[in-house]
Length: 442
Image 1 (cartoon, rainbow, N blue to C red):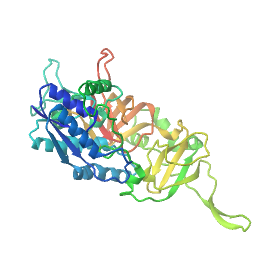
Image 2 (image 1 turned 180 degrees about the horizontal axis):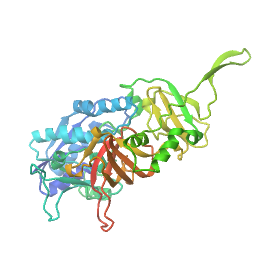
Image 3 (image 1 turned 90 degrees about the vertical axis):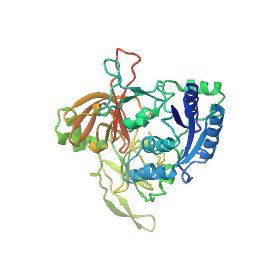
Image 4 (image 1 turned 60 degrees about the vertical axis):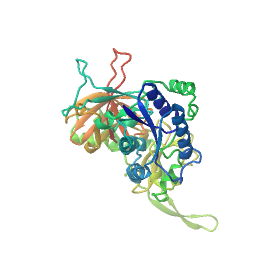
């Protein structure tokens, strides 16, 4: 079998190639360049020329052919433009998830096929298994194609199944994940033992194939800066808020709620009822007329920002506002009014939510047999960001979409991110790994 390894120049993909070669596969490597521009990138954090050089050295060391492909046009059209559009709408996308679905296991896959590959391998920390029935035989779909499932990687600190949550069965049928059963330390040891040039290379960070970026500067390629108000919301707001009280009342009756009640419960507070009035006053020896905001019982304008679309929920850095005993966190953004709402302290009520919704058109199931029908509920575990511990939750399918009711309030639930759901772990089996069931955009 001929396998194309997506060789990035990092240690993970290098060891993936090494293992496949040792296992007797006909292996070749292909390095993809997906980004040319440097605006907004932090110098030295994403040098594709260096990555390509290391990848080529690795291929030579292992003794496999090396190819180069430029997919930057596809990456911009299918990943970066999506990212710009999401930020403009006040959402925070995950480009790495899109990169896997649209580039690595689509555009890159097609290039690999053109070079004669049967399968594509990557350095992801996750495991792929055939779905087997009670008789131990593989289960196939109606067309006779074997079905596959994705399990968490063995290394709890490096599991990357989250990033593969949008792959379909065809893409999985062509994918190999050689290091999914290893821990990172094992991968490093194998690379050192084989004297691979990438053995000591640091893990990449930032946006997939772009690298670490100064996000506002990067986004200003498409999104213009515009000054707006930073509004601090006080704790008293939640004591008197009718919507906040109504949500708590609805939660007490979950999951037996009407469709409309689920929709209301899933809507985050938008603080549209916080409106400031201004007044004029005379200041200084010369009594210069100035304008200021009247005191507000629930909030205060405490600073300025350069565009609400440059901020994400839960963000702490970049506000540059002092005078508070505890850190400030972004709790909401309003891109229409260009307002950034913040709250003081990690326990601020505006940081937490228990119910979120995934619209029907945004739902993706790993297999057809995992689909939920309207009216069905299912206990599972969910993560809403990479490396978050799995959270216990109830999935509730209604005509308006899939509602996720978390057992515990979740911090900084961000529109545009992916919620990924996993099967419950079998407590009787200590080696049981959660299976990824599906995902959707919040």
